[in-house]
Image 1 (cartoon, one colour):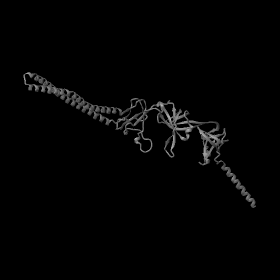
Image 2 (tube, helix red, strand yellow; image 1 turned 135 degrees about the horizontal axis):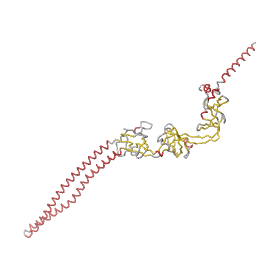
Image 3 (cartoon, one colour; image 1 turned 90 degrees about the horizontal axis):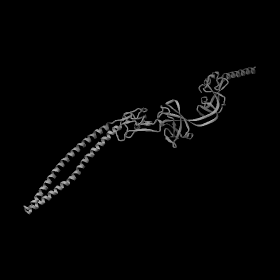
Image 4 (cartoon, rainbow, N blue to C red; image 1 turned 90 degrees about the vertical axis):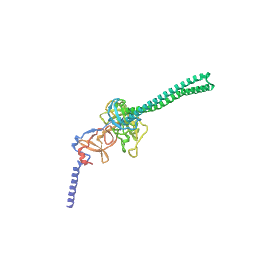
Length: 422
Protein backbone atom coordinates (compact mmCIF):
# COMPACT_ATOMS: atom_id res chain seq x y z
CA UNK A 1 0.00 0.00 0.00
CA UNK A 2 2.84 2.37 0.88
CA UNK A 3 4.59 1.60 -2.38
CA UNK A 4 1.47 2.39 -4.38
CA UNK A 5 1.00 5.69 -2.54
CA UNK A 6 4.65 6.66 -3.18
CA UNK A 7 4.26 5.86 -6.86
CA UNK A 8 1.17 8.05 -7.09
CA UNK A 9 3.06 10.95 -5.42
CA UNK A 10 6.03 10.59 -7.78
CA UNK A 11 3.79 10.49 -10.82
CA UNK A 12 1.98 13.62 -9.65
CA UNK A 13 5.23 15.48 -9.03
CA UNK A 14 6.54 14.55 -12.45
CA UNK A 15 3.35 15.75 -14.03
CA UNK A 16 3.55 19.05 -12.19
CA UNK A 17 7.13 19.58 -13.29
CA UNK A 18 6.25 18.82 -16.89
CA UNK A 19 3.31 21.23 -16.78
CA UNK A 20 5.45 23.95 -15.29
CA UNK A 21 8.11 23.40 -17.90
CA UNK A 22 5.50 23.62 -20.66
CA UNK A 23 4.13 26.87 -19.26
CA UNK A 24 7.66 28.37 -18.96
CA UNK A 25 8.65 27.42 -22.50
CA UNK A 26 7.05 30.47 -24.09
CA UNK A 27 8.87 32.72 -21.61
CA UNK A 28 12.34 31.70 -22.80
CA UNK A 29 14.17 34.74 -24.21
CA UNK A 30 15.18 32.94 -27.38
CA UNK A 31 11.63 32.59 -28.71
CA UNK A 32 8.76 34.96 -29.42
CA UNK A 33 5.14 34.62 -30.39
CA UNK A 34 3.38 35.30 -33.68
CA UNK A 35 2.99 38.96 -32.76
CA UNK A 36 6.53 39.37 -34.03
CA UNK A 37 5.30 39.03 -37.59
CA UNK A 38 5.13 42.87 -37.73
CA UNK A 39 8.82 43.26 -36.86
CA UNK A 40 10.86 44.62 -39.85
CA UNK A 41 13.28 42.06 -41.22
CA UNK A 42 16.12 41.66 -43.67
CA UNK A 43 17.84 38.73 -45.35
CA UNK A 44 21.40 37.66 -44.71
CA UNK A 45 23.36 37.75 -47.96
CA UNK A 46 26.79 37.61 -49.47
CA UNK A 47 28.32 40.72 -50.97
CA UNK A 48 31.11 43.26 -50.90
CA UNK A 49 31.74 45.34 -47.76
CA UNK A 50 33.40 48.72 -48.06
CA UNK A 51 35.16 49.79 -44.86
CA UNK A 52 35.15 53.56 -44.32
CA UNK A 53 36.88 55.78 -41.82
CA UNK A 54 34.98 58.80 -40.52
CA UNK A 55 37.16 61.81 -39.80
CA UNK A 56 36.09 65.24 -38.57
CA UNK A 57 37.43 68.72 -39.11
CA UNK A 58 36.63 72.25 -40.26
CA UNK A 59 36.33 74.05 -43.57
CA UNK A 60 39.34 76.32 -44.20
CA UNK A 61 40.38 78.74 -46.93
CA UNK A 62 43.82 78.18 -48.46
CA UNK A 63 44.03 81.85 -49.46
CA UNK A 64 42.85 84.84 -47.49
CA UNK A 65 43.65 88.50 -46.83
CA UNK A 66 44.40 89.51 -43.24
CA UNK A 67 43.42 92.96 -41.96
CA UNK A 68 45.78 94.41 -39.34
CA UNK A 69 45.67 97.24 -36.85
CA UNK A 70 48.13 99.98 -37.95
CA UNK A 71 51.68 99.52 -36.62
CA UNK A 72 52.17 103.28 -36.31
CA UNK A 73 49.37 103.74 -33.75
CA UNK A 74 50.09 103.05 -30.09
CA UNK A 75 46.59 103.30 -28.64
CA UNK A 76 44.35 100.80 -30.45
CA UNK A 77 40.77 100.78 -29.18
CA UNK A 78 38.03 99.38 -31.39
CA UNK A 79 35.00 101.62 -31.83
CA UNK A 80 33.06 99.31 -34.17
CA UNK A 81 33.59 95.85 -35.68
CA UNK A 82 31.61 94.20 -38.45
CA UNK A 83 29.88 90.97 -37.45
CA UNK A 84 31.78 87.84 -38.42
CA UNK A 85 30.26 86.17 -41.47
CA UNK A 86 29.14 89.42 -43.09
CA UNK A 87 29.51 89.57 -46.86
CA UNK A 88 31.31 92.76 -47.93
CA UNK A 89 32.36 94.54 -51.10
CA UNK A 90 35.79 96.04 -51.73
CA UNK A 91 35.95 99.37 -49.87
CA UNK A 92 33.34 98.48 -47.24
CA UNK A 93 34.27 99.36 -43.65
CA UNK A 94 35.20 96.31 -41.55
CA UNK A 95 36.41 97.97 -38.34
CA UNK A 96 36.94 101.46 -36.93
CA UNK A 97 39.62 102.33 -34.33
CA UNK A 98 39.33 105.29 -31.98
CA UNK A 99 41.12 108.25 -33.61
CA UNK A 100 41.10 110.63 -30.62
CA UNK A 101 44.84 110.32 -29.95
CA UNK A 102 45.78 110.85 -33.58
CA UNK A 103 43.42 113.82 -33.92
CA UNK A 104 45.12 115.39 -30.91
CA UNK A 105 48.46 114.80 -32.60
CA UNK A 106 47.21 116.52 -35.75
CA UNK A 107 46.18 119.56 -33.71
CA UNK A 108 49.48 119.61 -31.82
CA UNK A 109 51.64 119.30 -34.93
CA UNK A 110 49.49 121.81 -36.82
CA UNK A 111 50.21 124.25 -33.98
CA UNK A 112 53.92 123.41 -34.28
CA UNK A 113 53.81 124.11 -38.00
CA UNK A 114 52.24 127.50 -37.38
CA UNK A 115 54.82 128.26 -34.67
CA UNK A 116 57.61 127.31 -37.06
CA UNK A 117 56.13 129.63 -39.68
CA UNK A 118 56.17 132.46 -37.15
CA UNK A 119 59.78 131.71 -36.27
CA UNK A 120 60.65 131.73 -39.97
CA UNK A 121 59.02 135.13 -40.41
CA UNK A 122 60.88 136.44 -37.37
CA UNK A 123 64.24 135.17 -38.65
CA UNK A 124 63.60 136.65 -42.07
CA UNK A 125 62.69 140.01 -40.51
CA UNK A 126 65.86 140.01 -38.44
CA UNK A 127 67.92 139.07 -41.48
CA UNK A 128 66.30 141.84 -43.49
CA UNK A 129 67.21 144.30 -40.77
CA UNK A 130 70.81 143.07 -40.76
CA UNK A 131 70.95 143.26 -44.56
CA UNK A 132 69.72 146.85 -44.50
CA UNK A 133 72.32 147.79 -41.90
CA UNK A 134 75.01 146.03 -43.92
CA UNK A 135 74.06 147.98 -47.03
CA UNK A 136 74.24 151.23 -45.08
CA UNK A 137 77.64 150.26 -43.66
CA UNK A 138 78.93 149.37 -47.14
CA UNK A 139 77.63 152.66 -48.57
CA UNK A 140 79.32 154.57 -45.78
CA UNK A 141 82.57 152.65 -46.31
CA UNK A 142 82.52 153.38 -50.04
CA UNK A 143 81.92 157.03 -49.28
CA UNK A 144 84.85 157.04 -46.88
CA UNK A 145 87.11 155.39 -49.46
CA UNK A 146 86.17 157.91 -52.10
CA UNK A 147 86.78 160.76 -49.66
CA UNK A 148 90.16 159.31 -48.71
CA UNK A 149 91.11 159.05 -52.34
CA UNK A 150 90.38 162.75 -52.83
CA UNK A 151 92.50 163.59 -49.80
CA UNK A 152 95.47 161.69 -51.21
CA UNK A 153 95.31 163.82 -54.36
CA UNK A 154 96.03 166.93 -52.29
CA UNK A 155 99.63 165.82 -51.82
CA UNK A 156 100.93 168.70 -53.96
CA UNK A 157 99.41 171.32 -51.74
CA UNK A 158 99.73 169.77 -48.28
CA UNK A 159 102.65 168.69 -46.23
CA UNK A 160 104.21 165.29 -46.48
CA UNK A 161 102.82 164.43 -43.06
CA UNK A 162 99.24 165.21 -44.09
CA UNK A 163 99.72 163.34 -47.36
CA UNK A 164 100.93 160.29 -45.40
CA UNK A 165 97.94 160.51 -43.12
CA UNK A 166 95.63 160.66 -46.14
CA UNK A 167 97.20 157.57 -47.66
CA UNK A 168 96.93 155.72 -44.34
CA UNK A 169 93.27 156.69 -44.02
CA UNK A 170 92.59 155.48 -47.56
CA UNK A 171 94.18 152.10 -46.84
CA UNK A 172 92.17 151.77 -43.65
CA UNK A 173 88.90 152.66 -45.39
CA UNK A 174 89.57 150.26 -48.27
CA UNK A 175 90.36 147.48 -45.82
CA UNK A 176 87.14 148.18 -43.89
CA UNK A 177 85.13 148.12 -47.13
CA UNK A 178 86.69 144.81 -48.13
CA UNK A 179 85.83 143.36 -44.71
CA UNK A 180 82.24 144.45 -45.15
CA UNK A 181 82.13 142.84 -48.59
CA UNK A 182 83.63 139.65 -47.19
CA UNK A 183 81.04 139.66 -44.44
CA UNK A 184 78.31 139.49 -47.07
CA UNK A 185 79.26 135.92 -47.96
CA UNK A 186 79.45 134.83 -44.33
CA UNK A 187 76.19 136.59 -43.59
CA UNK A 188 74.46 134.78 -46.46
CA UNK A 189 75.72 131.45 -45.12
CA UNK A 190 74.46 132.35 -41.63
CA UNK A 191 71.10 133.42 -43.04
CA UNK A 192 70.74 130.12 -44.89
CA UNK A 193 71.70 128.20 -41.74
CA UNK A 194 69.16 130.03 -39.59
CA UNK A 195 66.41 129.51 -42.17
CA UNK A 196 67.40 125.86 -42.52
CA UNK A 197 67.10 125.36 -38.75
CA UNK A 198 63.57 126.72 -38.52
CA UNK A 199 62.76 125.01 -41.83
CA UNK A 200 63.74 121.62 -40.45
CA UNK A 201 61.63 122.27 -37.39
CA UNK A 202 58.69 123.15 -39.58
CA UNK A 203 59.27 120.13 -41.85
CA UNK A 204 59.32 117.76 -38.87
CA UNK A 205 56.10 119.22 -37.51
CA UNK A 206 54.53 119.01 -40.95
CA UNK A 207 55.62 115.37 -41.40
CA UNK A 208 54.32 114.46 -37.95
CA UNK A 209 51.02 116.14 -38.76
CA UNK A 210 50.75 114.35 -42.09
CA UNK A 211 51.61 111.03 -40.41
CA UNK A 212 48.93 111.55 -37.79
CA UNK A 213 46.45 112.45 -40.52
CA UNK A 214 47.44 109.34 -42.48
CA UNK A 215 47.00 107.27 -39.33
CA UNK A 216 43.50 108.63 -38.95
CA UNK A 217 42.73 107.34 -42.43
CA UNK A 218 44.27 103.96 -41.52
CA UNK A 219 42.07 103.69 -38.44
CA UNK A 220 39.11 103.07 -40.72
CA UNK A 221 39.89 99.54 -41.88
CA UNK A 222 38.27 98.67 -45.19
CA UNK A 223 37.89 95.46 -47.16
CA UNK A 224 40.44 95.24 -50.00
CA UNK A 225 38.26 92.79 -51.95
CA UNK A 226 34.83 91.23 -52.08
CA UNK A 227 34.24 88.34 -49.69
CA UNK A 228 33.12 87.27 -46.26
CA UNK A 229 34.56 88.81 -43.10
CA UNK A 230 35.90 86.50 -40.40
CA UNK A 231 36.67 88.36 -37.17
CA UNK A 232 39.72 86.83 -35.48
CA UNK A 233 40.14 85.93 -31.78
CA UNK A 234 41.33 88.55 -29.33
CA UNK A 235 44.05 86.58 -27.57
CA UNK A 236 44.51 89.21 -24.89
CA UNK A 237 40.91 88.75 -23.76
CA UNK A 238 41.39 85.03 -23.07
CA UNK A 239 40.62 84.02 -19.49
CA UNK A 240 41.98 80.56 -18.66
CA UNK A 241 41.70 77.78 -21.21
CA UNK A 242 39.55 77.58 -24.30
CA UNK A 243 39.13 79.60 -27.47
CA UNK A 244 39.16 83.38 -26.86
CA UNK A 245 36.26 85.48 -28.10
CA UNK A 246 36.61 87.38 -31.38
CA UNK A 247 37.31 91.11 -31.37
CA UNK A 248 34.32 93.32 -30.63
CA UNK A 249 33.56 97.00 -30.18
CA UNK A 250 35.22 98.35 -27.04
CA UNK A 251 38.15 95.90 -27.07
CA UNK A 252 41.67 97.22 -26.60
CA UNK A 253 43.98 95.81 -29.25
CA UNK A 254 47.65 96.42 -30.01
CA UNK A 255 49.70 97.76 -32.95
CA UNK A 256 49.88 95.26 -35.77
CA UNK A 257 47.22 92.95 -34.32
CA UNK A 258 45.42 90.63 -36.77
CA UNK A 259 41.82 91.78 -36.54
CA UNK A 260 40.01 90.00 -39.37
CA UNK A 261 40.39 87.87 -42.45
CA UNK A 262 38.61 87.86 -45.78
CA UNK A 263 39.02 84.33 -47.17
CA UNK A 264 38.93 83.47 -50.84
CA UNK A 265 35.81 81.31 -51.03
CA UNK A 266 37.13 79.66 -54.19
CA UNK A 267 39.98 78.03 -52.24
CA UNK A 268 37.98 76.20 -49.55
CA UNK A 269 39.27 72.83 -48.30
CA UNK A 270 38.36 70.50 -45.45
CA UNK A 271 41.08 70.25 -42.80
CA UNK A 272 40.86 66.90 -40.99
CA UNK A 273 42.65 65.46 -37.99
CA UNK A 274 43.86 61.84 -38.09
CA UNK A 275 44.94 59.97 -34.99
CA UNK A 276 48.33 58.30 -35.08
CA UNK A 277 46.82 54.79 -35.04
CA UNK A 278 44.72 55.59 -38.14
CA UNK A 279 47.40 57.41 -40.13
CA UNK A 280 48.53 54.38 -42.10
CA UNK A 281 45.01 53.62 -43.34
CA UNK A 282 44.67 56.68 -45.58
CA UNK A 283 46.83 58.25 -48.26
CA UNK A 284 46.81 61.28 -50.56
CA UNK A 285 44.65 60.96 -53.64
CA UNK A 286 41.94 58.82 -52.05
CA UNK A 287 38.32 59.91 -52.58
CA UNK A 288 36.20 61.19 -49.70
CA UNK A 289 32.53 61.84 -49.17
CA UNK A 290 32.13 65.05 -47.20
CA UNK A 291 29.18 66.06 -45.04
CA UNK A 292 28.97 69.62 -43.73
CA UNK A 293 26.99 70.00 -40.50
CA UNK A 294 25.47 73.31 -41.56
CA UNK A 295 24.39 71.90 -44.96
CA UNK A 296 22.59 68.65 -44.04
CA UNK A 297 20.63 68.31 -47.30
CA UNK A 298 23.58 67.17 -49.42
CA UNK A 299 27.05 65.69 -49.43
CA UNK A 300 30.18 66.80 -51.31
CA UNK A 301 32.69 64.76 -53.24
CA UNK A 302 36.30 65.34 -52.35
CA UNK A 303 39.81 63.98 -52.63
CA UNK A 304 42.65 63.99 -50.13
CA UNK A 305 45.18 66.57 -51.31
CA UNK A 306 47.90 65.98 -48.74
CA UNK A 307 48.63 64.58 -45.29
CA UNK A 308 51.15 66.14 -42.95
CA UNK A 309 54.36 64.18 -42.50
CA UNK A 310 54.75 65.13 -38.85
CA UNK A 311 52.29 64.82 -36.00
CA UNK A 312 51.13 67.59 -33.71
CA UNK A 313 50.97 66.97 -29.98
CA UNK A 314 47.56 67.74 -28.48
CA UNK A 315 47.53 68.01 -24.69
CA UNK A 316 43.81 67.55 -23.99
CA UNK A 317 44.44 64.55 -21.73
CA UNK A 318 47.08 62.13 -20.69
CA UNK A 319 48.89 60.72 -22.48
CA UNK A 320 48.81 63.49 -25.11
CA UNK A 321 47.48 62.62 -28.55
CA UNK A 322 49.50 62.69 -31.74
CA UNK A 323 47.39 64.03 -34.59
CA UNK A 324 48.13 64.42 -38.30
CA UNK A 325 46.53 67.08 -40.49
CA UNK A 326 44.95 66.19 -43.83
CA UNK A 327 43.55 68.51 -46.48
CA UNK A 328 40.61 67.42 -48.62
CA UNK A 329 39.78 69.32 -51.80
CA UNK A 330 36.05 69.92 -52.23
CA UNK A 331 34.28 71.43 -55.21
CA UNK A 332 33.09 75.00 -54.39
CA UNK A 333 29.73 74.39 -56.09
CA UNK A 334 27.59 75.52 -53.15
CA UNK A 335 27.58 79.18 -52.12
CA UNK A 336 26.51 78.17 -48.62
CA UNK A 337 29.99 76.86 -47.84
CA UNK A 338 31.81 79.04 -45.36
CA UNK A 339 35.14 78.85 -43.52
CA UNK A 340 35.11 77.36 -40.00
CA UNK A 341 32.06 75.17 -40.69
CA UNK A 342 32.31 71.77 -38.99
CA UNK A 343 32.35 68.81 -41.36
CA UNK A 344 33.14 65.11 -41.56
CA UNK A 345 34.56 62.91 -44.29
CA UNK A 346 34.00 59.22 -45.00
CA UNK A 347 37.10 57.74 -46.58
CA UNK A 348 37.17 54.23 -48.04
CA UNK A 349 40.03 52.26 -46.51
CA UNK A 350 39.27 48.63 -47.48
CA UNK A 351 36.86 46.48 -49.53
CA UNK A 352 35.97 42.88 -48.54
CA UNK A 353 34.56 40.76 -51.37
CA UNK A 354 32.10 37.86 -51.07
CA UNK A 355 31.52 38.02 -47.32
CA UNK A 356 28.35 37.23 -45.36
CA UNK A 357 26.59 40.49 -44.55
CA UNK A 358 23.77 41.54 -42.31
CA UNK A 359 22.40 45.04 -41.61
CA UNK A 360 24.06 46.50 -38.54
CA UNK A 361 20.59 47.16 -37.13
CA UNK A 362 20.11 43.37 -36.86
CA UNK A 363 23.06 42.94 -34.49
CA UNK A 364 22.30 43.14 -30.75
CA UNK A 365 24.30 42.63 -27.57
CA UNK A 366 23.01 40.67 -24.59
CA UNK A 367 24.99 39.95 -21.44
CA UNK A 368 28.28 40.42 -23.23
CA UNK A 369 27.24 38.23 -26.20
CA UNK A 370 26.53 39.34 -29.77
CA UNK A 371 23.18 37.95 -30.99
CA UNK A 372 20.73 38.17 -33.84
CA UNK A 373 17.00 37.32 -33.90
CA UNK A 374 16.50 34.76 -36.66
CA UNK A 375 13.03 33.95 -38.03
CA UNK A 376 12.19 30.27 -37.67
CA UNK A 377 8.73 29.60 -39.04
CA UNK A 378 6.45 32.17 -37.44
CA UNK A 379 8.83 32.92 -34.61
CA UNK A 380 12.18 34.59 -33.94
CA UNK A 381 14.99 32.65 -32.36
CA UNK A 382 17.80 34.35 -30.45
CA UNK A 383 21.07 33.12 -31.93
CA UNK A 384 24.64 33.87 -30.86
CA UNK A 385 26.76 35.16 -33.75
CA UNK A 386 30.34 36.27 -34.35
CA UNK A 387 30.87 39.49 -36.30
CA UNK A 388 33.80 41.04 -38.12
CA UNK A 389 34.19 44.46 -39.68
CA UNK A 390 31.53 47.10 -40.20
CA UNK A 391 30.91 49.68 -42.84
CA UNK A 392 28.13 51.67 -44.52
CA UNK A 393 25.39 50.20 -42.31
CA UNK A 394 26.49 46.59 -42.93
CA UNK A 395 28.24 44.13 -40.60
CA UNK A 396 30.35 41.15 -41.61
CA UNK A 397 29.17 37.87 -40.06
CA UNK A 398 31.89 35.32 -39.35
CA UNK A 399 29.69 32.59 -37.88
CA UNK A 400 26.15 31.94 -36.66
CA UNK A 401 24.25 33.03 -39.79
CA UNK A 402 23.98 31.79 -43.35
CA UNK A 403 22.94 33.56 -46.53
CA UNK A 404 19.14 33.39 -46.80
CA UNK A 405 18.50 33.63 -43.06
CA UNK A 406 15.88 36.23 -42.18
CA UNK A 407 16.78 38.43 -39.21
CA UNK A 408 14.87 41.06 -37.25
CA UNK A 409 15.94 44.68 -37.58
CA UNK A 410 14.34 45.47 -34.25
CA UNK A 411 14.16 43.48 -31.08
CA UNK A 412 10.89 41.45 -31.14
CA UNK A 413 8.49 42.83 -28.53
CA UNK A 414 7.74 39.53 -26.82
CA UNK A 415 11.45 38.81 -26.59
CA UNK A 416 12.02 42.16 -24.84
CA UNK A 417 9.27 41.35 -22.38
CA UNK A 418 10.71 37.90 -21.75
CA UNK A 419 14.17 39.34 -21.24
CA UNK A 420 12.73 41.69 -18.63
CA UNK A 421 15.05 44.47 -19.67
CA UNK A 422 18.16 42.32 -19.24
